[in-house]
Amino acid sequence: MAPEILEGLVITHLGKALAVESPEGQVVVCHSRRCIVDVAVGDRVRWEPCGGAQGLVVDVLPRKSVLVRPAHGGKLRTVAANLDCVWVVVAVAPEPDFLLVDQILSVCEHRQIDAGLVLNKSDLVRGREAIEEALEDYRSAGYRLLKVSVRTGSGLDELRQALRDRCSLLAGQSGVGKSSLTHALLPDRSVRINELSQKSGLGRHTTTAATLYHLPEGGNLIDSPGVTVFGLAEMSGRDIAGGYREFHDFLDRCQFNDCRHLGDKGCAIRVAVDQGRISAERYGRYRRLLAKSANTSLFAGASASRSED
Image (tube, rainbow, N blue to C red):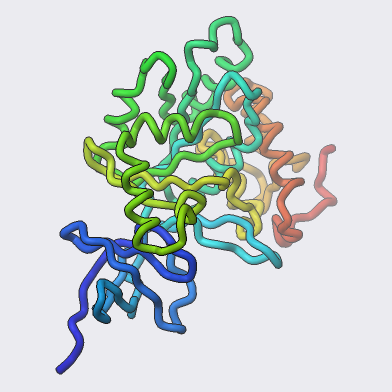
């Protein structure tokens, strides 16, 4: 008799095992076949029961999206699968790292994952015109901006509505309040952590692993402690330029198809910056992301001989 094959959702890693949730909400500890080497939180899998509330993952179902980050040895590690949206959290303190914000947004554009910004600690923003002007650049580029305060509760209902019926992840630099937001959105989070810890037999191990939670209002939130950056290694120069939404209307107007948008002749992006149609600050960070990228062939075939710099 052929073994029963079931479908489930990976909600966290338990050491070398996986916590797989059935459609009925039962959590089963599963191991994977050796040929399955890349299973991430958010993956939908096929698994077969092995007795004793344990199972074996036999297949990973097709993903609609995937988000990766740098790992040891120049490799990439999958952070989450089947995401609908990444919300980049910034705050008045610590001072926003907008280069990191641009990097995360560029990766999301490349991966075709929707993205938005959350200004946490918004009750402290008064008088910080530079921050508000920088955030307006993102709103002008088409990104949704939500202003919230965990301390006062302001804006949390709007954030809950934005997360509803979607699979989302909060990203951003350390200290901006991602953990506080997660606690506010998931009042029963500690209960779920205890349940998973008991199943795993690994104590509090699960508190440091990426974990998918079901939001009370509907939708899922993947909490990924310690992950603040997603790598550019897989992205070409064209991909990075394409990661800036406000560039899109001008990319096809450059004189050369392999324009780097740096000092190239006939660059429509440079003209748009000079005309104030593209934020000079965002353009400056684009140049810094190019320099930061580990990809040594950002624009294959691009000629330095036409540079205007």
